Image (cartoon, rainbow, N blue to C red; front, side, top):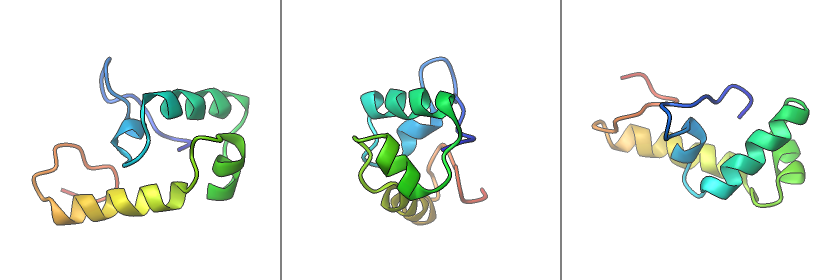
Length: 78
């Protein structure tokens, strides 16, 4: 979450996390400007629309492992 960047002018890597939509992404980015996140719990406390960020990351990793044709890889090497 602290190092997430834009993929292109229309898409951000945070949008690739299952369950994290456009509004939540902007909330995360706004909170990140105030200071880096210290833990998954810190994300949940500071961004009310993100309830379980650890589960989002785990689900994304599983998606990348199960779908070798996934266009964008955030966690798994190609």
